[in-house]
Image (tube, rainbow over all chains, first blue to last red; front, side):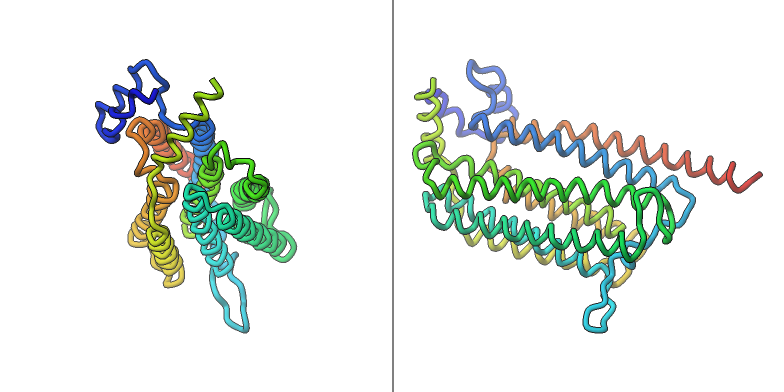
Length: 225
Length: 116
């Protein structure tokens, strides 16, 4: 395998794709765990795309008025009525957590165990606060606005179904990501990857960035449309 | 086999491209700005084509930064990029199909619900 290293210099041409697939070696030159994470994320892309596409379909085909997300998710803070403010804060928090995660991966490859653990914990904490805000948002929508998956007083019935399904599935991913981060951070702290290498931090990072990536699309299509 | 795996992984550990922390901070700042811009699209209530153009431009810029820099796809081999970018073409086709289907259902509903 190390004999092929000199060929691997060329990484961006189509010729490199042909040689990756036709040579007598594994096609993807990366740890299997990382490849499996990429393939899982690709399949998850399809799941979220189908949710967002069905949301687009029901929203375009309904004859009822679609509730204005700008108003539904507005908050009154200190007497000021600010549209969509909670969602904006959640977006900034998730982006910040992606930044800390990227730095955790960087420190992991430098072999700086302590900083990696701290940054992963910070990422998990930001993720947990994101879930907390989402719980607040759900409570407000269910209790105060009376929005249900089968109907709501603001307009099109499909609004609740699409909202709870899409943000719920995303929230589930964030929750799973927080647990995943904490488990891996604990194992890094215990020194379990000292010999094996720290690819696992990058793999965890891929998952976490993906959660952020999905939120970018949800933010654009569900909240800004 | 195990031994070989460890060896490969260690070889990769050393050849892993190192990036300065400042690069991540710059991208982070850029993502913050882009998120701020897309929030402003709603705040100033831009409508119509302008709204959609801005939303989509900011969305794709953010998504691109996350995938290419944070997820390190820029430094992956072409085979990996194709693995990740070719299948989603099916999604684009599906979206186009569903959009045209939604238009058809909408017109049918208008015709049959409101035109007795």
